[in-house]
Length: 562
Image (cartoon, rainbow, N blue to C red; front, side, top):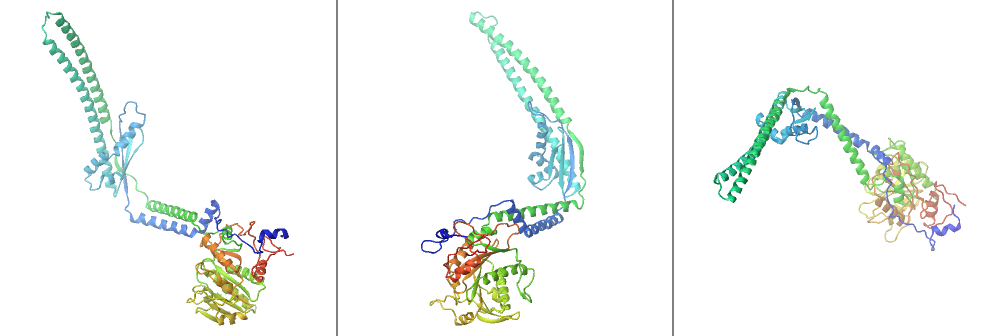
């Protein structure tokens, strides 16, 4: 309850209330695991369908794609280790060599295949079982072809290793022979220089040179002998190593087909992969889409954007066609519609104006609001009240439910009660109402006559920012905005709320359709600048042309009057 000192906080010096539009603060709720869980629950039809599609596609691929057969062969090798190389590295070198492009080229040439070497490399794998054993596994379109390819790869790999080892041995021997040749040439050069000098030098200089050359000759002979011994030793060692690499490497297990998979294993594998892929991709898609979406779903977010409390929220009303049955709107959607109708009836009951008027303003989808308005009209008419329904929406969804589709004013009988229906003429920009007629836009005489004796004036109107909403005050003194979860942005909802206020019509509250079951937000506007007005306060404000100060207020929507 407010005392007199609090009134200046709510009203300006001129006595009018100034409300911040709040357009700078329309952020949505915080993303969390609960948010993601709600997204997945809400879109379960999407990802379940995608998972089933992936299951079907995977099963179809298993049936359509050719079956691959496998064969394997194992090789016992003596890897040649380089000095300082870590243990285990030699067999890895052999594995890389078996999967190299030169070996694949030799195998393709031997098999006489017409496929590329790159594609052939993808058909087989080489794994190291121990530090001396390699296993080659090959896939092909038939078991015999797989065996043939495995044998060819093993043969060409062993042959390539032999050529590689022999080439390495020849390089070593050539290097050593070059050293022997160099030593021999140096010795021959020194010997030739000695032969050019006389055996008995006559001068001291010749004697010194002859002595130096003979000493160099002796050193050259010794160096040649050492080089020849090293060459012999290295040659023997290289030959032994090469012989070990070549002769101790052989096929351990000849190429043979591997046991075929069971008939069910392949379809089950493909179906499982398709199921998981469809599930993960669809879930990831809906989560990313929800994270980047600027559409509002939570009650608090909608209330903040609308700058009005969301006093009623229902779950999904479901797709489909609406129709009127013996007890009003029938089907699985009737419970949700009845909740909205009951709330709208309480808003009407609290009003003291004559006639009692209310506008239902959809921010997006019009089908559920139209059904609620039609059901409310029938309910009021059954109470003996004279009801006028004005459908100002394109396509006249509420009027069509009552059996009227053509523009104009008509009185129809629905379920034993009479209701006057006003349908907007699409050729007109706006349809003026009878409550606040303007000289520039007078309402039609038929509309004035129909509303003159009405007890309830119910209006369904979609507001267009490009046209404004000044005509709305001619049809209602209070309005309720409906928002479908996930359909409208914060900017759109905020614009609809401001259009209602600018028209001079009191915005009572908002209704959220399609709310998540996990949404625990309150949907109320409780700030120091904006106070949530109750239904009774809205009625008092409407009766006083929108300017009234009250000393009552409560969070629950039930005022306490002094």
